[in-house]
Image 1 (cartoon, rainbow, N blue to C red):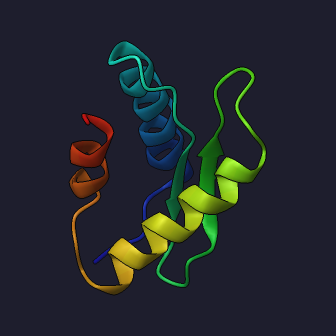
Image 2 (cartoon, rainbow, N blue to C red; image 1 turned 180 degrees about the horizontal axis):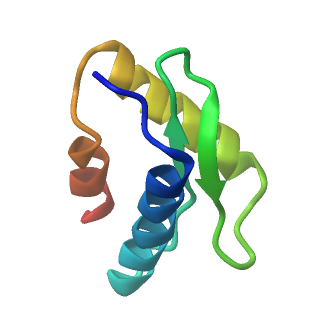
Amino acid sequence: MRELTTDEAMTLVTEGVAYAASIDRPSTIVVVDRGGHVRAALRPEHGRFANVEIARKKEYVLYAVDAPSSLLLLSMRG
């Protein structure tokens, strides 16, 4: 599996924040690399700063167990 480029990671977080807002669930979006290190993060206006770390840990766990990030989208829907 190849590493995402910076542009790809930024596109993912930008579109993720926009999607979350469109379903009325403002959310912090984080993209991590294989080691769990942040490649890109975006927090919506007035979002809590702790949400970046929470989102990073969720994404890392999904990566560690080879689960798709789309599982997080399902949980956002309610």
